Image (cartoon, rainbow, N blue to C red):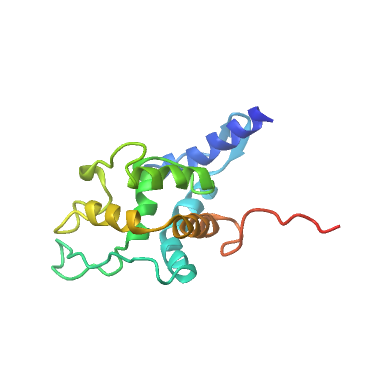
Length: 172
């Protein structure tokens, strides 16, 4: 059983780590994968932040930052979008496990180390690096709000988006 879990993790991690390049079809630890499946997962990550805000409309947007390129407010550059990019592309974590999202939030809370501001998503595209504001916004959330955020993120990346990926126990 443990062996199977490691194989799944390798595949999930491979999907995320392949974001910068295209992998050919092949096998990882005995599991088949294709470039199309990897690309589909990467493309899907782009709209997940919107789904999270649909599920949690009161969650802070932190989208008041000014774009270096246009000089205008980058309203599509949100806290959840940056959180997702940090989780996937900076840390290389899979998007389908609650524990991985909790590890990412622990970094925002300063419990497992500090975020590196120079590596933070959008640090180079916005006039002011949003890392400090994003950390402050996450730290203001209570435990229930953080749990709801984690569930919304997992839901957004689950195959049946918008629904809990956990099975419902059968009623006797």
